[in-house]
Image (cartoon, rainbow, N blue to C red; front, side, top):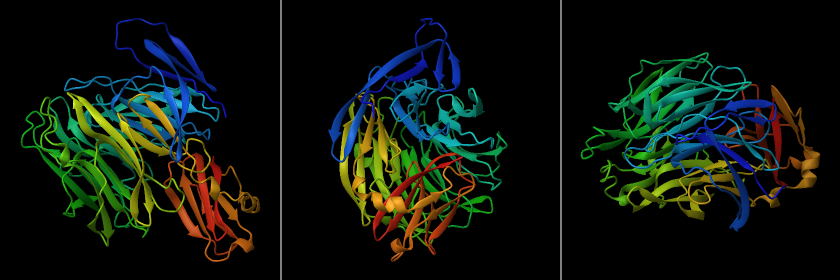
Length: 512
């Protein structure tokens, strides 16, 4: 593996300097851009507890309130990264450029395309094949509205679906018609009217639904089927009130049950939070979705008053018990902005926590941020590592493609860091691996996992994960061969984990 990195970043120039057009070649793709600035970054190494740190330092733009997402959007087997945010701070901040980087095993990274940037308070990123052409598309909510970027053979083509900003978004098949719809909350237009809505997708064309949802601003939203009835329920939060008149703003959090396409508030006893994140997760492993959230119990936010007290920031967890949500006691400090990200980095079968965001004020509009890894040890989240400074966002992803979860941080100096997971190399039993057969690989519709009968003592589990560590399929071997249906999955890299009395085996497959 090469011990250096060349990263090309392209952002919109914020000056009046004219620059010549240029062409960047990425594999077989040619992209033309003009009026842009190029930066070259080089990596350094350092050790950090159970992770090896690779710093991607240099003249990278410093995005405030950034967001980040991993995705193998070009289906080449390597995770790509999208980062965005804003280039100014304060009440008059504005959107910035966005950079895409595509990686290979030698850690070479290339700029891919550009899109408008985010808003200081909140923004969202999500991937889906919106027009069902077997290419991953991107949706971003930011300063300029909600943009959908359709991937073509020569780059991305954008369309604006709503003039909404200062909010979050999620994608899911709300109307069960086989394509990805968009859930978003934030404010609408320059009058900053709180707005929460669903945009229905019909073969890549979006129309706003007539579903009635109470509008909230400066919040988060997440779709998940918590009652396991086959349709998507919603957890979302934010504030009500006039954002131009800070005193009197109230934070609220709602769980809406989907009853045949109509959303009903279940009146869950949840704290009102905003400017944070929400994530569904099966924390206790009982097969239904539990809930995690973080953010600010709103006192006041606007210009010089900003946040009255950092003691009003929380991280909360709730167990789903037959559709009712009961708080799980945790002592994890909360953050604003940033993210909650769950992934099984230690490969023990339960979700571990990666949390990031702002925790305190340094001066004016400058804030102290942190990200922390909490290992799930038999249902107790135990602090493993903390990074403090201006690490504003962190996300799990199998960067190395070796079957375990690494993570990315963005913010501070160096601005982009990769924490490479060194923890689970002792789990890999090469002799067992030689005896397990996975075929066909690559595969289109289904794969078969064949395990020798000698390794079937007790229950042998077989789990399929995406490269972000999210469980897609799980089951046990009733015979020596188990079939897994992958016809409905997007193209790209996936991970199979086989657990037996002999240990844990991890193998990669490619969906074509």
